[in-house]
Structures are given as structure tokens and as C-alpha cells.
Amino acid sequence: MSDEERRDSLADQAAAWIPPWERPTPPRPDGTDEPPGEPEVPVEPEPHAAIPAEPEPHAAIPAEPEPAAGAEPEILDTYRSSRTETVQDPLRESAAEPAGEIGVGVPGKRGRRRPAPEPEPAPVLDDAELRGALEAILLVVDQPVSELTLAQVLEQSPERIGPMLDEIAAGYTAAGHGFELRRAAGGWRLYTRPEYATYVERFVLEGQSVRLTQAALETLAVIAYKQPVTRSRISAIRGVNCDGVIRTLVSRGLVEECGTEADSGAFLYRTTTMFLEKLGLNSVDDLPPLAPFLPDDVEELADATR
Image 1 (cartoon, rainbow, N blue to C red):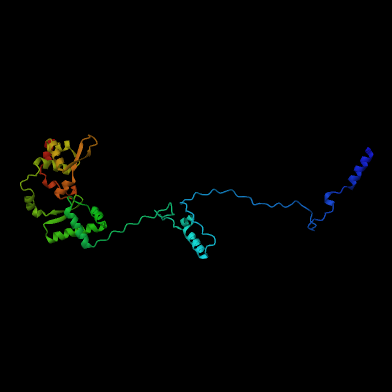
Image 2 (cartoon, rainbow, N blue to C red; image 1 turned 90 degrees about the horizontal axis):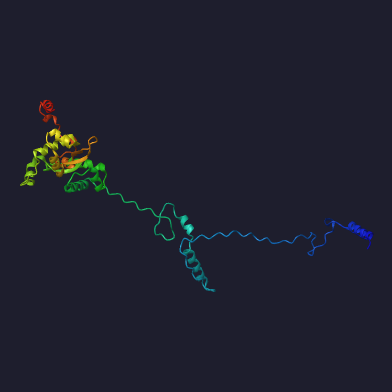
């Protein structure tokens, strides 16, 4: 074929060419006139990411054997009901349990404990029983006992102890007993009455000599009125060395050390609770004043010793 014939053939083909959008639509096999499109591809749902299973907090429940096929309907219903009652959701149990309660030893509940039961309040004693309890305790104490200690032992209000002790003391005095209840060394204790002291002394001290010497009494008086005081100050007041006497008073439990002086570092001495107890005093403020016992020329004597 020559070049001219080839060009005529291509021109005829170009003239006879019809664009696709202008071509007639051929009939579909199902009889519809819709243009054939791309076949529909079923879209499968996108699978979700696998959620890691949380570890079961409880022990695995052993699987019960399924009932055999063809079992009676009553057996099947009993099996389903037992499975429903046995297997429970632990999350529902923990959510249903009220917050703040703590259950120790309760199966299926972890991390919660039940509050400890509150102690029952102590019974309130009536006046007669309280009086008897106080008298029984005061008969066995070997040193003055405070009102707070008595209230704690009897589990009663401290506001009731003080008035009751005052009432007991007033009753002993009104009845004329040979003993009395009084305050001493910050507490309460039973004492014999002063008018019967000679009989008690005869019974206790018969054949014994427990009296302090004159030097010990003078030294004890200086410490009682000048406390806290150093040894040098005591010796300066008495005019003699008091080291041996102070050791005797310390061994008897009437005097004790109570620190050191800031300037010199010397030991300081003061009277003890036993001193107050033996003299029947509540505090050193109850000591009698010294002015009535001083001589009239005390100032002249002080000037003479300087």
C-alpha cells in the first residue's frame, strides 16, 4: 500500500471514530439499560485491634461438664440456673460494694477492708459504786495518786472524780474517823489524823530510831526554802561543810539533783515528792513562812557575819 492510500485510510478511520461518551449503550444481560460499571466488591468490616485480655484477678473456675445431648429440659434448666448463680462478674461485685468498707477475708473482694468495730463506751458508775471504787484504790496506793489517773483507771469523766473525793474527805471528817483523805504532792492519799499521831508513832517506831539529826534538819530546811540551791550556797548559809549531810538526805529520798547552775556548773538540789508526802504538803508553797521564826536582831546578825 502506497503512502497516499495509507493516509486516506487513517483519515477515514479518524472521521469514523466516535468518542466513548457518545457511543450507544449496549443492553445488559439482566435487561436493564444502566451502563456497565465496575463490579461491586463486598467491603469487609475493618478488624479492630486486638485488646489484650486483662489477667483474671481470681482463681480460674473449673469448667463444669456440659450436659449430654438429648438431656431432659428440667436438667438443662437446673444446669443453666446453677451456672448463673455460681459465675458472677467481679466488676459488678466491686461496684455494688459501698465505698469505704474494708472486707478482710471475703472471697472475691480484694483491696477493701471493713472498718474495725468501735469499742463500746464504758458504763457510767453511779455515785455509790464510784465512791466504793475510789476508797478501794486509795487503800492500796503507796503514794499520792492524781485525779486524772483515777479517772483513767475507772474509765470515768475527770469532772466527777474531784467532787467525789472532796465529798469522801468531808464524810471522813464529819464521822470522826482516825484517818482522813487529803491532797498531798499533787494527788490524794489517806493519812492518819494528827491527834492520833502519838499512837501510830509508838506502833511504828518502837525500838527504831529514824529521826534526822539536827544538822540534817537544818540542811533540809535550807534546801526547802532556797531550792534549787547549790552545795556551796547551803554551806555558806549554815557556816559548815554540808557534803555528808546532803548525801544522807539524797539516800533517804528527801532531796534530789535537778540540773546544774549556768554560771558555775555546780549541781543544784531540791526537795522530792517524798518530802512533801512525809510533811503532808501539796506543794512547797504550803511551807509555813519563816518570818515568825526569825529573831528580832536578824539584820544585825547578818551584818556581823559579813
